[in-house]
Image 1 (tube, rainbow, N blue to C red):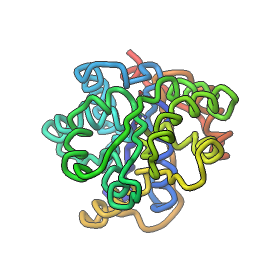
Image 2 (cartoon, helix red, strand yellow):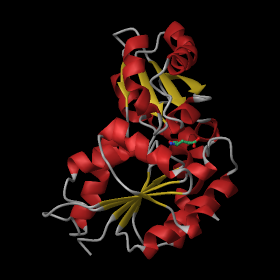
Image 3 (cartoon, rainbow, N blue to C red):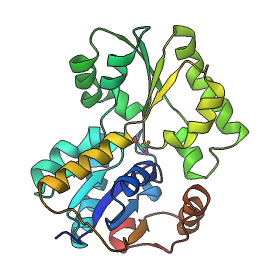
Image 4 (tube, rainbow, N blue to C red):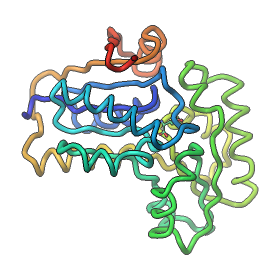
Length: 265
Ligand code: DGL
């Protein structure tokens, strides 16, 4: 079991921001990453649609004997993780909108949340806000268009910068001092955000906490892999060249990208 892979999936390439944190924290683990780029974005789809896709991908990852599955997508976590946990016995780790640390740390009492429409409309966000951030003001902003730019590898462009400016100007004007990245695609705009935001605004990325949660579960279950070379496999339901190019540019990883009939039907 220890040598079995961790499965990670997202609507597309955004979950690679979580993959990065997991590989840094757990360098010996084997990983299978599934990008559902053919069906991306999830943010404007129904919960039923996203749950169907999540089940297809989970079945695929279980056919590869994954020991734990990371739903590296806030939108899919909101739409489907509760049902996935009922249907399958494998442990699932989902994305948590990092409102909790931001609410604890804010000095202005105002926190910006940048996420997809699906995440902002969902119960998961509402409940987390009620539980941890009822005493602060949250300024929410759907990041329309950002996921699509990352999927095309166009995030570090003038167009990306303009969109980030547009989506953050309202929050800046309201006086937020923390901005939570509520979509796993958005950490790829980190440099742009740093350039565009006033220096006193902090950016919160929940991915390191997710990696820590993965480590805790594997360690409690005594299924951590402790040594030897790790192996990464990348699958997509969409375009293989776009994925390969993204890995090369963002992570300096040269890898063959695979497709599978069950993922792209
Ligand atoms: N990375 C997904 C998330 O964290 C993007 C959702 C989408 O495909 O719209 O929500």
